[in-house]
Length: 116
Image (cartoon, rainbow, N blue to C red; front, side, top):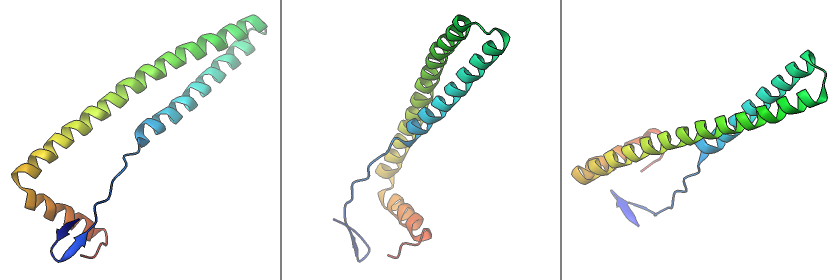
């Protein structure tokens, strides 16, 4: 338990959901499906041959998968690096001015409606 003024606060674990990666995966899947369907539709319109349509679909699936995977890899690592830099900054501020950081956090929650 920690205290803030006369009010006791309980320690609560905060679980970090990886929402960004989930969002990116969903958007990547939608983008890949739309691109593949569009390419297959164009090839089917231009050439009615089943082998050409199948080849276009498989090639599009492979290219889209690799492209999406590479893009998401870079995106997730940039996000992780940004969060790490932010964490280092906050730890530095906490070490140099712990009471100021506590007051800052308290004011954030008070503005959100928490009564102390």
